[in-house]
Image (cartoon, rainbow, N blue to C red; front, side, top):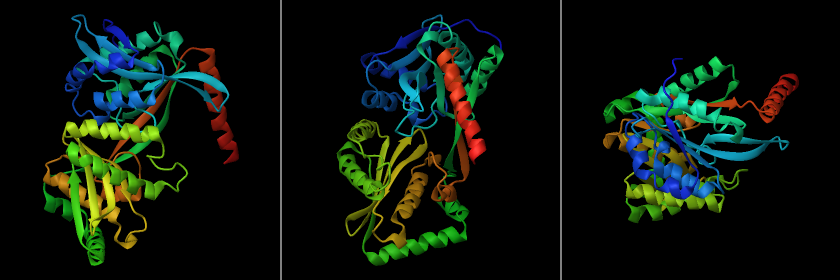
Length: 374
């Protein structure tokens, strides 16, 4: 790999300084085609505000020789233990825990990406070498050049990295034509949806509604939380809103993004009683299907959650959206809707520390045990 002149790097370690980056962050992000909502300043700042403690922030800003911001590495440092035994420090992307962020990445346009990654590499293995043991790139789009460029740097230096996991993210590419979309569903699926609609209509008065304005979103979001918890409260993880911290984060993100026209809370009601809800985002031609909720005991044969999703996809077509991103998970109902599959990759790299060496040995031992016992 050809080496470019190093960029100047400044580390942001306080929430107050992060708060002041909003305008510069937005300006740089506009130069990155196809970036996801989960890289926006609002999403990552509010995640850091609600989920980080102390001085975990390690956002790295990269400037060229004209002092222009050309790259942002939105990192934080967490301290944890492997198998409860080996303590280690992990450098990873903001938003990469708890809230199911997708398509995370280093923020830089293609013109500057190589220089940004080379400078990050030099910084992490020189100036900041003593600060971390493991570096994790979580949920990076499989097509991102970050993966190839970063691996190339590691391979040349003889350092150790590995693929930790891959994630399936079904998507629906929209043609803009409602009739074409319905025809592509196939006869069996169209018949199934029609049968379920009639089943629900026989039970009472059916209405679909959407809340997007700050005034309407708060009430609709309360219904979404109630319906989601009805479905998942008995599960081992208790649902997304099982903790007060999660409730506070999502309430604030909904409030902030609704003021920017990026929130859509959709409801399906039967005789004015909500049966299903969807919490989604609208951003740069993409509708993100983030979180559903439904009453599992209410007209189960009609599958109100599935009917609401079908309705919301058609609304995205009417609104002129280009894509419906169903986000992480290969659930059958998502795969049946999808026209394409997007994948994200999580990679892990090890520093040259004794602690990193011990961690790698432990991970290798775990894999060896699996081979023997399975």
